[in-house]
Image 1 (cartoon, rainbow over the protein chains, first blue to last red):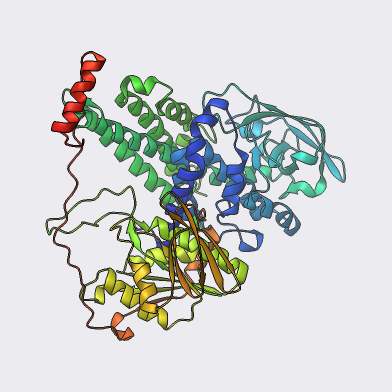
Image 2: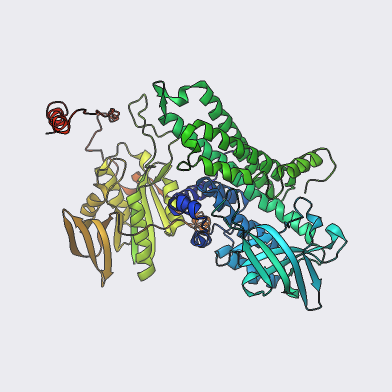
Length: 385
Length: 255
């Protein structure tokens, strides 16, 4: 066992940190205030190879794997949680899933653009009445011979209206439940019959757009079916086991941001003639944040290591996501207390941390779902995939 | 065009400097980076290479950790790296480093040598200029713009209150000032390629420069006195101003 980063991993970390500080940090406040999605950040990430993890080099992959990817994302998300979606939305979601299940034509057509940042990617599973119960989705794709006709809607889709290419899961065999769902590659710029409605009422993650998608007789060419017909549920679960790493890493990074900010504040804020960090109750809070951030980070590393070694990782991914999101919410709460009144002011980052932390308890599997996965595998009720 | 970049690994500019019990600067646990001014030199080298072709060799005189800095330069796009193992030197100062670098570089083909105008750690600004002297070639320092044509470098440099344009025949040493360019990030594929690039470790003894000894000895290091709290001068403006002037003259002794 070796806890040290390799020379390459160290370089990835240094580069990502420097990239986040120079290219993302200067815009955090402005983009939060304006709920603005800064597309050019994704372009830059693509140019620098930050969207090409675990993708074959022939499709533009960067030659590195999961461990390097989570190390990079951790540095990026520490500066601005909204940008954790850059890697999930393009690489670990669509690009990686097309690479696993796609035909050579599909891979060639879509992966290079997703990896280079030419396209913005997304994926759509959730509906207004279908959340944790994925198989209950109603959006339907009817087989019309040489094409499918898609009708229905999707809700809370990250990057829904800003993306160019998305994976959309829809029912192809009504009544068959999990065995009647298929996955489609949707070209949003060239498919009539899709309305994409931005959602402006989110509690946080403001610079990361979220949308409702409405499909009205949208024509999806036959060649855009990804993987086998009615095989979409399995693809969806496979994909989520990857994209959830974006949540886990983003949440761990957020807890680290809260910790770093709190340490700085605790060392600078003088009360009763000394820095508040000298008080035991602040120390208790710092110690809790440090412990949980460290534990969350290593759970993320462990899951990444399993994935790099092609070993089952579902339980570890769920553990990382569940633990890291709890750590993030806890750390954001504590940071707000340590910062006192400044913490409650939007001029300081605590409010953003708290807003952004709360997302993790819900998306890509609620904490309840991840608890079920961890326990189910542990009790032997389901295999670790 | 054969381009050489001389770099130094320095403390991260945000690193907290501590002096150990032995009186030396304690580098334990400090993250080290390429001297920021040397990054401008690397970037310029890569741009010159893009225009004229050729090879970029990055050379550093340092301990084992300086390989990390060289590797990062390779990840940015330099072709080859040379580490001159400083630990094998009896003593090292700017003079010794420049002599050793000159010896190593004189055995390589070069048309232009680039470096940073200053290292952010000791701030001596000596090595690159001494290197030019040792190689008996011209040097231009603090360059903010560089054009090369027909084997002549036209360098714009900052001088007090303005700029100065100097033409020098190549080969020459050019030191980079902030503003010369915006250094690139190493790309992920670049980082992967860096591993396969040549990084040669050179023992100074093999260069035939043994017996060099430093001309300068550091007596001791000390940290700056911590900043004191400010003083507020109360009272009517005219009276306060008078009091302030008195304090500046008698206490701070700056007037």
